[in-house]
Image (cartoon, rainbow, N blue to C red):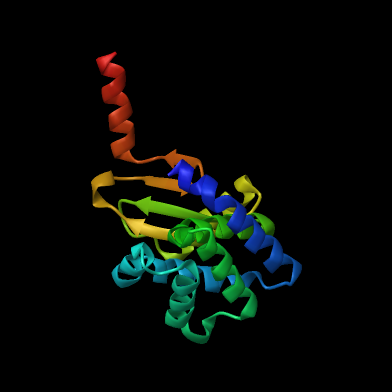
Length: 178
């Protein structure tokens, strides 16, 4: 995974810098998201692995599948990525682009998993507290997992806060073993 990220980073950075310079972050985000989704399709995967196709053929086919969703610059980007045999890295490129975009916008996606459904008021309060703690705008994504027994697990990038009963029980069990 780290190797794929390393290979994808220059492409994501170049796309981000271009999009930022031309104030097209949202457009490029959508284009890269579409490209990532298309590249994961089984039929497209087979096409990308076909040894008889040249990189230009792969790029042209890829762009054709995406239809008119790509402007000339985005099509050029796909051609460059294809020339370097990196079309399979489009999901990683898209993911890195989104990280650069979030950093630029001072925002962060936060996944909150709770034992029970959080109502809108609870989500808003949690988002406000996390926003103050992280110093960023928080986009909260809530999910339920009854296996937590109680409490929540919060994931924001590298930060993980485990306030679940299951997590506390696991810590207690580990402490008792040692």
